[in-house]
Image 1 (tube, rainbow, N blue to C red):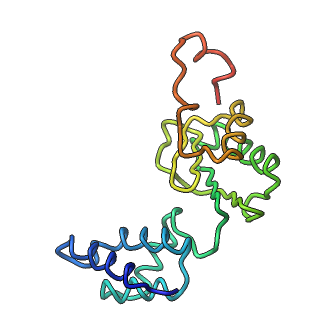
Image 2: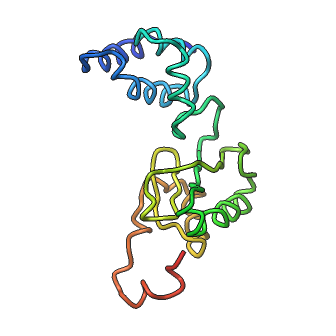
Image 3: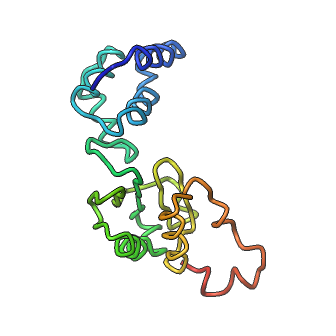
Length: 179
């Protein structure tokens, strides 16, 4: 991991916002994830040293939150929630469909894609949820999988317009919009 003067300055600016250095941990972790795409031992040691804590404290946070990873991921990182509410709403079948259509096995990186299950994306009420890079998409039912996959292939995943709630009450009750 190469710490540039710009990265060092950004880290210092983040730490300066907090009365206790340790309070900046999550923001520094996001900075490292955005900069390098993953954590290695050097990244964990860097943050720990900046915050004056033990490496294990940073490692514990990094391993708990699904947005942080120690493995290099594809340019398009697809995280499918598999906790109870999402699984009951069809997220397992959705992930299998995405995997099949993108020709990328779940839990692996192939070409520009990484597809994996995560434990919770914190949006249970709008299950099933899929996060692509840093953008959360909710209500992504298996019935909408084809359109969702098309959006992924066209790299239009930063826009959630296609997932706006249907305006017509009859459409909401139709099987097409049920998970």
